[in-house]
Length: 344
Ligand SMILES: NC(=O)C1=CN([C@@H]2O[C@H](COP(=O)(O)OP(=O)(O)OC[C@H]3O[C@@H](n4cnc5c(N)ncnc54)[C@H](OP(=O)(O)O)[C@@H]3O)[C@@H](O)[C@H]2O)C=CC1
Ligand SMILES: CC(=O)N[C@@H](CCC(=O)OP(=O)(O)O)C(=O)O
Image 1: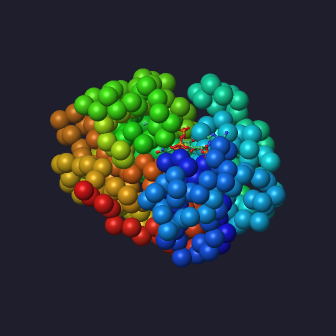
Image 2: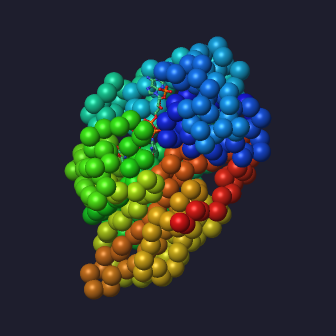
Image 3: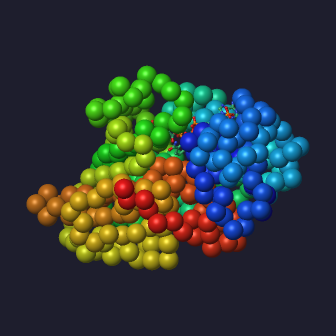
């Protein structure tokens, strides 16, 4: 398989390179840039010395036409314009940005404050939450890889909403992320002296992943709802922990909630349901494509606490993108992704 990566110099791109390097079906990998053409990749990223010593190439649709798959890992607003030039030229397109996730252009405009991608391509793109959309992903030419937060949130709550075990009209979702979630471009908000020894909430009630979560709940369960969703920055590099608080439906037990998750994901290698955990952290999944989920019912309040953890750069980005590529090409989902978490 011949694979191209646009945005290879970013955090998502670097993670694609790390994982695809060990993918047995990838024979050739070329890296594309909008700003650093001709630079030897390993001269910029020394950890790839002897692993990827080729130069960065200019983004060019005729060159890209000979690839089997092209990953775009670029800031929002880029692929809305770039992908229309690549659609139909040959490769399968897997976009890691938010540009093709929201079906309604007005929602994208409202939450991303940017111009949306063309309407027809928004309708053609397939939402790449692998465990929930395998059938469509298999046939897709354009995959909108989910956001990092929505991946952690949706995997943990969709089964319980679908089986009406929780009250989908009262969801409070509280999520925390490591700083690599913000990408490699330095900013005031991610400056070391302002993130180290600090813990902050940001984009209060305004996060762009709110409409994505609501759209996906509706797509996969048929339930229309609004959610309270807030995000926090944790002074660590990788990892997302999502905690959802929800009232349960009358009479539901912790065992039923647990069994629902186990049953939903019994054939899905990357979702692990953990029984009776009283503590839970992102080091369970660091560097891997796993999403670990735990549920605990508070019988005093009849509210359930649903916790999930992912590595934002793996299951939240590059890993899930490769999982989707595997589905598209008829490979086992685990191909190239069978990685033991780092833990420390
Ligand atoms: N970081 C994360 O945890 C996650 C990120 N995402 C999304 O994935 C995308 C990539 O994220 P991330 O890797 O963190 O971002 P980064 O900011 O780290 O990297 C983005 C890369 O895109 C390239 N780029 C910038 N502008 C353009 C342009 N106009 N045309 C083509 N390429 C461009 C740059 O490379 P060059 O200058 O070489 O072209 C840059 O290195 C984003 O949309 C992000 O929201 C999704 C899930 C998780
Ligand atoms: C820690 C951090 O800043 N995370 C980013 C996640 C970005 C992302 O995934 O945004 P897209 O929807 O454009 O893909 C954020 O909260 O905006």
